[in-house]
Image (cartoon, rainbow, N blue to C red):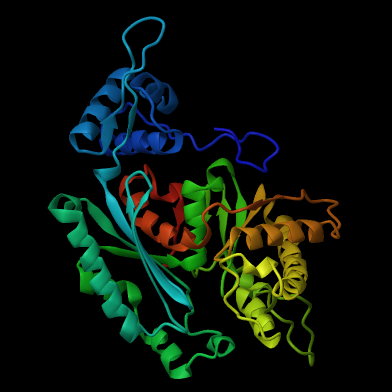
Amino acid sequence: MTAGPGLDTPTAPLRPRGSSQGGLRQYNERVVLQALRLHGPLPAADLARLTHLTAQTISMITKRLLDDGLLRKGAPRRGKVGQPSVPLSLDPDGAFAIGIKVGRRSLDLLLLDFAGAIRERWSVGYDFPDPDVLLPEITARVADVRRRLGNAGRERLQGIGIAQPLQLSAWHELLGADATVAAKWDRVDLRAEVEARTGLPVQRLKDTAAACMAELVAGRGQALTSFLYVFVDTFVGGGLVLDHQLRSGLNGNAGAIGSLPLGRAGEGEQKPAQLLSVASLVALEQAWRHAGLADDAAADGRALTAPWAPVTQRWLHEAASALALAVDSAACLLDLDAVVIDGSCSADLRDALVAATQQALNHYDWRGVVRPALLAGTLGSDARALGGAWLPLVANFAPDRELFLKVAGA
C-alpha cells in the first residue's frame, strides 16, 4: 500500500502474519480477515503469501469463514496460465457494530457493517447533554437499529462502542451550561447504563481517542507508524498512535493536547492559558457572536466567506500558532511520522487550519528534531462515532486487540 496524499514516500502498511502451528485457529482466522481489511479482495494464493500461512491452511480458514458468512467470493479472474483465481473479500453483512458519540453539543449514532460502511445514521443536537434525556434516546435508537437489522442481522450485532469525553462536566461554564446538569455526568457510568438498557456488550473510549482509532483503522493511519492526532471540535483534543498502536495511557487520557499550556507558569503569576482556550471551535463561535454574526458557520462552508471570513482569519492565525507549539513539543518528545488534523467543521475550514499551522511551524527551530508531516484527516465529524463502532469489531475480529488499542482501565 502506498502512502496517502500528502506523504512524500510510500510507507508499508501493517502486515498481519499467521502461524501454521496447531492451537492457533482463531488467531489465524483473524489474521486472514485483517489482511483482507487492509488490502482489499485477494485470491487465496495472495493471502498465503501475505500472511505466511500455507496454501492448505488458507484453504481451510477461508472455507470456515465463507461458511460463517464473514467472507464472500468475487468473480473469477483469468490469468495467462492455470485456473482462474477467485478473489475473496469481507462480507459486509458478516457482522455489525453500533458506534455512539456523546459530545458536548450533539449525539451521533452509527451502524457500521463488517466492511466498514455506515448503514444507518442518527443525530440530535443540544446546548449541553443531559444524561436523563440522552439515555432514553440512546435506548430507543438502539432498539430501532435492531429492528431494522431483522433477525439475521441482530444475531451478527457485535456490540456498542461509546466515544465520550472523559470529563463531560468540565469547562461547562465556557458553554454557558447549567452546572447542575453538568454535574450529573460525574455520577453516571454511561457504559454500564447503556449495557443494562440494551443488553449488548458496551465498550467506551475517550471521544478524541476513538476518532484517532478510526483514522488508524480506516484512514491515513494505515500508512503511518506513529502520529499525533488532533481533533478540532467544541474543545480541541487528540489521540496518540505509536508503532501502529493506539496508546490510551494510565488514565485513558494520552493525547489530551487540549490541556497543553501555552506558556510558562511561575509562582505568583497567572496560570497560562490552555490550548483549548484558543484552538477550539468554541473560541471561534464566541468571536463570531461578538462580531454580531451567526455562530453556526463552521460546518457548512460559510466560515471562509464574507462576513465571517475576517473573524475566521484571526482565529486561524491564533489557533495555528498555538497548534504549532503543540506539534513542535510533541515531535521533540515522541519522534513522530506525522500529525493528523481533523475536526467537526467543514473540510475547507479544516484545510485552512492545516495550511495555517504548516506556515506557523516554519517559525520554529527544528535543529535536533525531525519535523513531522502535517496532514488533513479523512473522516471529519463522523470520526468519533466511527471509532466507537470499530471497538467491538476490533475486539472480536482483529488478530490482536493491541494491534490497534492499548487501554489501561480507560
